[in-house]
Every structure is written in C-alpha cells, then in structure tokens.
Image (cartoon, rainbow, N blue to C red; front, side, top):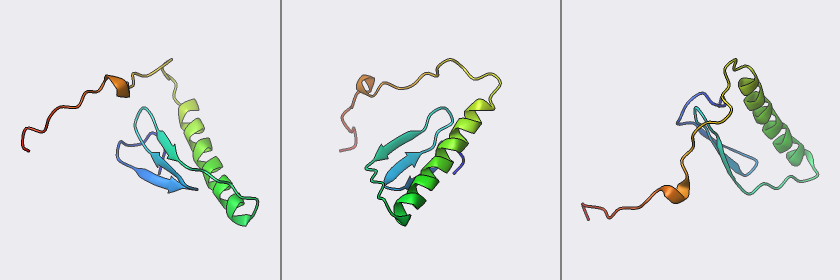
Amino acid sequence: MKPFSDEVSSVTLAGLTIENGATEIAIYGDLRLTADRKGLEAATELARFFAEARDKLASQPNLPEAVETVDASAVSTVKNPFG
C-alpha cells in the first residue's frame, strides 16, 4: 500500500490496521513488539511504512499547514428509513 495514494486501501501490519486516504491515514489496533525475530520483522515493516508516508509528505511542494478533517462527534446518526 502506498501512503496517501487512494481512499480504499487497508492493510494490517503487526496488529495495527492502517486505512489509506488521500489526505489522512487512520491507524488503530493493538501493537505488541516482541524481543525476537518476529518483533524485528514487525518493527521493520512499520518503519518502512512510516518512512514511505514521511517521504510522500516531504515531497509535496505545496503541503498545506493543515487539512480539514471530519470531527466524529459532529456526525449524527439518523433512523434507517427502510427498517
């Protein structure tokens, strides 16, 4: 998955779910890095992803100060009209 490249990609790395977006990336889950080869592999994968994200942002000549995001508390739920 290439960071900030689309609005539909999702991947799980080391127990974290990473959802791609054009203007933001959501990361959630439970991360446990263990002091073994499996932990090293997970740390390496995560470091690679974050380095790609940083490089993508750093390469943008007109990177805005901040992007607009949706405040989850401002979203309201409506009754389903079909059931």
